[in-house]
Image 1 (cartoon, helix red, strand yellow):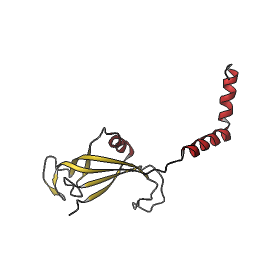
Image 2 (cartoon, one colour):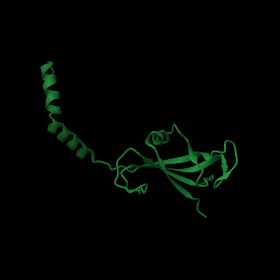
Image 3 (cartoon, one colour):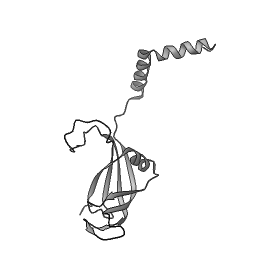
Image 4 (cartoon, one colour):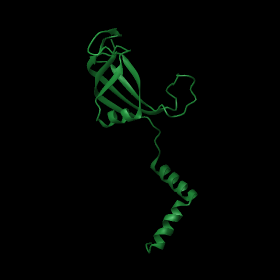
Amino acid sequence: MTAPEHDLKCWPVYFQRVWTGDKTFEVRLDDRGFQRGDTVVLREWDRTEPCDCTGSDHGPACAKYSGRTITARIGHVMASTAPRGNQRGFVGMGYVVFSLCDPQRHDGRPKLNPATAVAQILAAGLAAGSLHRTRTSATAAGRT
């Protein structure tokens, strides 16, 4: 039997800390019965980004998702409730803390070809006149 996979939204500030390895655990509402050995997929999700989704139906193509994900196995689980919400435990608030083991980072953001990126930067600079100003300032300062 395959372990369950939990697909979770994760705000950018917390996602980045997991991405860099500074945060190795999650605190979540215990509404899914998280268990040791389950898989979690954290999806970077910025609630401040505008999108065209109706209501709270934010599918994978929603603009609020950056495309970056982290897939990890759940290790130790410490819950304030028994699995699936039976109230009991250390605080009784219905939350669970679990460790993230062997996180795999996936940068699903679109990648630019380096030559294309340089061309876009140069085109933007020329259009704005910023490259000309930089050259003119250097010449005025006696540098070439």
